Length: 85
Image (cartoon, rainbow, N blue to C red; front, side):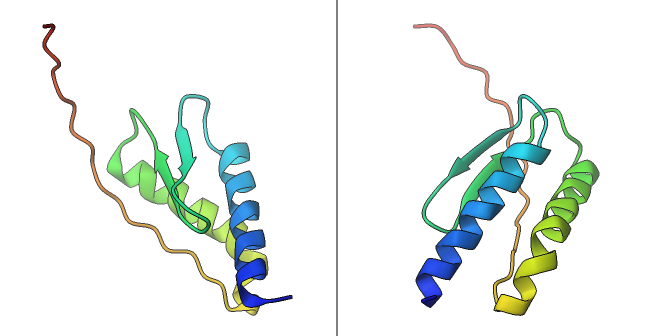
């Protein structure tokens, strides 16, 4: 299997894991063939780290042997007060 096809297949698998194991109300979207954006509303920073590590562990059990790894970055989204026009 070519490298790109293998990477895309593993990214598809990661997307399935994200959809299956996140809570109702969490948001998952695919940014491109290999990147996802996950938003966990009403979730403390430490809880997000635990969720991310759990996802990485579930995904990583089979992929490290293929030379594919997962990385996550955390950022807090601040709420914005919208004004009506």
